[in-house]
Length: 309
Image (cartoon, rainbow, N blue to C red; front, top):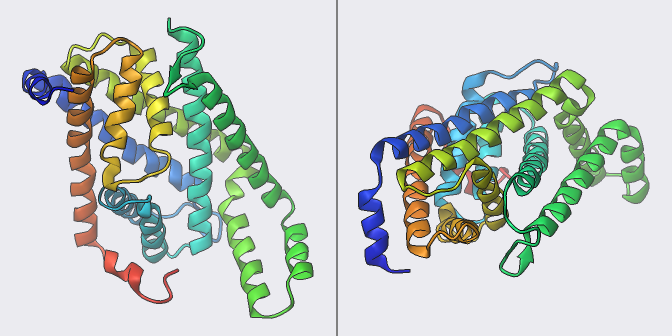
């Protein structure tokens, strides 16, 4: 790409659509809160307070933007455990189920985008068929969901298996306690109403996220429709599934450039869009996370203390 052209495209971008795109993208975090309250419940099965979970989300996603290897998920787990009093195993299980539903939803929307677009059937990114990636990832997410359902359906069998394989002692008791916490974290799968709610909020969340991409297209006069935004979103999620850099810097931009190349968008224009969108949507959650850190007793340095693993 040509840096001068990238800078020119950014200077000429329309500020109002870009601001709207940033606002809509930031709305996905409150939507995550609504869904997480269905997944993570108190010991009596009731909903946990909103404030502790919101602070955990803000701090966790802020940490994802400044730390590598998705360390923000561990930060979110620690923050939720400390602020809400929920079990560590229940929190981590709820986040795992959240990721399963994210995968199923993104794959479903990607499949819909492939059907709705006028791209060739064998469209590839990096010599890998997008349709094939969607199929494999969807199968993996579905298998993970089936495994989670089995843990919920047969907790006694799981406990018996652990006690049969491991010798009696503290280790066995800790593993059994962990299974109990995992089972508690997956209880949403037993409630049809809550399960439908999680599915519904997952769909709203990712449709909203794709809408933010589409609004951003207007700021740079990129002629790609909403189906293209869904396709871009799916490719992007695959591109950043393994976090290698803080804030996905580089990975995020490369995935967007690859996705927009399918529509004939030049590297310079696609790069300017990706850099602006990534940089501007980075700011609100970092500020919200910093505010939550200031308002709560959680500190990132606490993660280095013994006993927090």
